Image (cartoon, rainbow, N blue to C red; front, side):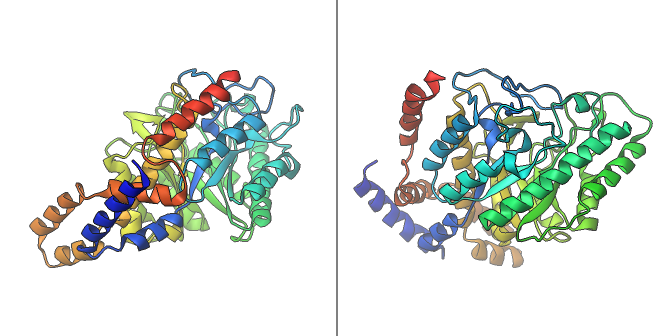
Length: 421
């Protein structure tokens, strides 16, 4: 699609949306304020760089596939992320796991990590002018082999993981301080039981104790924000997950933390979009992990589906943008990893564009008058509105490839970069 056609289509779309009381220029200004935290672990299938041959092992996480071009060092991860950022409109963030430290070939155990192992990441973000988020890595480690970390009844192991989270929080605070934008530190653990346990409560008592110890130091919210992430079940933890949604929601409310809502971490019939306004009645902010579960937490590449649109609508309809921290969380090793990033991120952006283009005021007036047929009719009409024209204009205006043009950009990157690894 050439520039003249894009401008002509946008002018028509602007007029159509305007007839519903929606200012498309203002919508695009709001789109520029939407920041998505891109997860570094899509580049290398959640392997990390603790050792030269780091590979994923255990802990309820599994990336499937072996597509050529996997990032094998920090330089390649950064190059891949820079390529992804160049194909997305707006300014995004980077989300880093602790196992991606710049360890210089030295084996540094997780209870020994320091700021110096992540300073080069901070400097890289400074150069790009972007923010960074951080995660403790409580999985794929000998001290997680029995399925328990922060809730372990092995006191030595429990203290090891408490120290790891404590250090990750300190690093996060420094990240936020240096970059001038709060770093969201997320804590997720795989702890659970494959078969029915007798002492669920004992593990939850220990988890609460560990979190209290690890989060004993308060950091300014201008530097870092704590989030805790629940899960319905995991591989090897099918019968009981210690860090359930009920547990973490209670902990977050009691301790003024963020609850992380991962839309792959609930029963397939539950909708995270419905949980957002419920949680924000009691919490200042939430962390959102966007993925695409198929039957379970399978971490497929995000696509523009109804679950994602409900999430975006719930945030936009209630002006929750400043209270919801948005990140991606999927890892597909069966296709080009850069392509997976761009498809997932653009799909998420499209969902928010659709939500912002909705004539919410009109729909709310109909709803409050009990005009439910009319509300339904207008909602259905919105589905065939010319969002594509607005999206294409937004991409062109942002200086990134329009429509499927990014596909050839990624193919070129594969030929010139990924195929040489």
